[in-house]
Image (cartoon, rainbow, N blue to C red; front, side, top):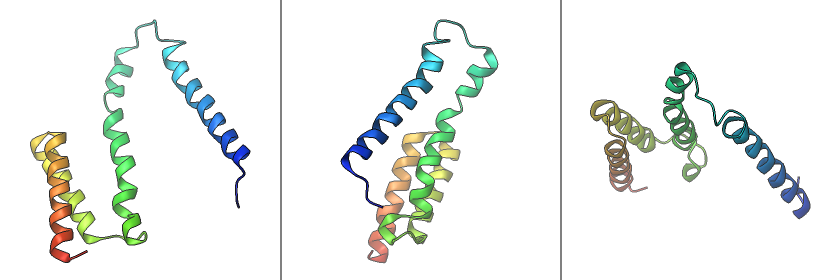
Amino acid sequence: MTLTSDQIWAIIGILAVGTFLIRFSFLGLIGDRALPPLVLRLLRYTPVAVIPAMVAPLVVWPQATGGQPDPVRLAAAGVALLVGVWRRNTLAAMVAGAATLYAGLWLTGL
């Protein structure tokens, strides 16, 4: 199915309005009130949930391999996870994962 330019702009507009309403519900409607301690505690875990959700499809179904799982990318993700848990440092985990990915690609010649 091919979308026309007008349909694409309509989708972008609908997504923009939806995103605005989601953010406004927090910032506009309850932004001047203190949130309960439980909500504040739970919001701390948002990045921990969002970042892996964005990265996981790129590791499991990478576009570079046509959507097939790749041992090099899985190893890099595993190293990043282990370093992140061990060091409790996001930057160290990212550097270790990237180094493992590039070393694995270089060693396998991919």
